[in-house]
Length: 230
Image (cartoon, rainbow, N blue to C red; front, side, top):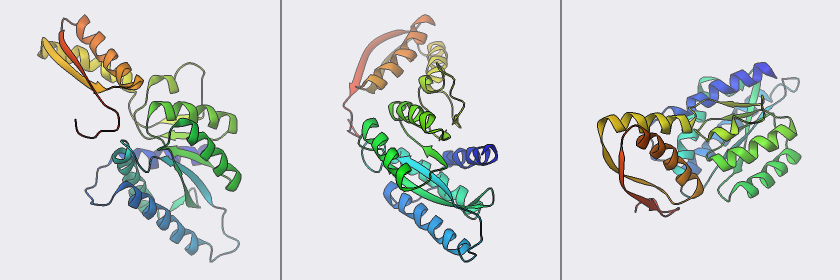
């Protein structure tokens, strides 16, 4: 399992690679599933071949985070193509779990997926709340969870969860460091963030560091969730 886990870190890290393409996130997810299905068909020609390595790829198919899901999906497509759809000598099968309806629905989907398929590892995940509930669920289910996107520090702090691996930066220290750096360049500014708990929390991290470093806020504007342009 450890060998499989480390290889999945490499696959998830590839999600940060941006490759221009016109396809939507849903089309990318469908392409990944088809790619792995084709690879499995090739491998299954040998009935005595190795068992499947099933990945529960948890990504939103719709909503404001769909574009971010597309980038993660691109990375998986690249990584699987580079490995010919094989991980640790086992053919990869992708099982998509839609997270667009919120954390509670995501857990129900993960539970249903685990009943239908023996999931070896859960991966993907966009958004701190979704990552938080999935980290708790996968701990109970004793399954590894590989996070490709930047999420809040709560997922990686508090109780030690050795089954969770992150391949990107921790978002809170990033905001704090940015606040200190920008205060040296600009002494006044207006902040803009999502009008949500997560959005306010991120901006708060930034503004606290910005003010401590001598910056002064003129105004704070909040954008409505779900609107791409405001």
